Amino acid sequence: MREAQRLIIEALSHYVSEPAARNLLQRTLTQDGRAAETLSPRDWAALVEGALFQNLQAIIPIPSLPSELRRVVRLLHAMTPAEDAAPPLETDPSPSPNLPARKVDLTHPEARAALAQELAREEGVTGVVIHGPTYQEVRLPDRAEELVQLLEISHRLLSRQQPYQAFYAVFAEGQLVLRPLGDALIAVIGRPETNLGRILHTLSSLEAQGGQP
Image (tube, helix red, strand yellow):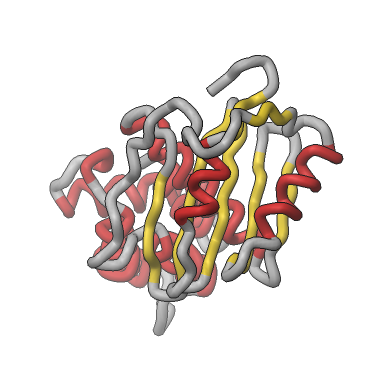
């Protein structure tokens, strides 16, 4: 999970030099004994709050976990679904039979804005994020930057583990549907009681302009 390592090193670099941050993290991983690629977001969060913090205290006399590291821990915990979360959905790559295929070019600002607005109007939806290599469209009340970063990391992790058509998870504060489209991701966040099935059907009907899945 290279993204977790990058976030931790960036956070540590606020307090020690970057080489020292890398060495500190590597020493902590060596002490832990597990390979970095086998650690889940929950494992990384526990490592930061435990062994890594203790090793940092040996260098800098600080009474509590620094704010930058607390932010990383929040991100990692947010990436960990609740115990009853549904597993990733391996949906049929073909669009829902109830909806015709819709081609959309997310590189066009008007198309992005229209799609984001359409999804945001669905009952129970609290946020929409469309994020691509050089563009993004965000409909979120607050903490937008942190959530967009979290969604991008989740998308990368899912893409590396296995190709996916959609990802669905239940969190303490709501639900999330994540859908890759071409080189972009579309995320819809809803309240805990929201039925996101209709939204998932809508997302599955989308096709990137040019025929990309």
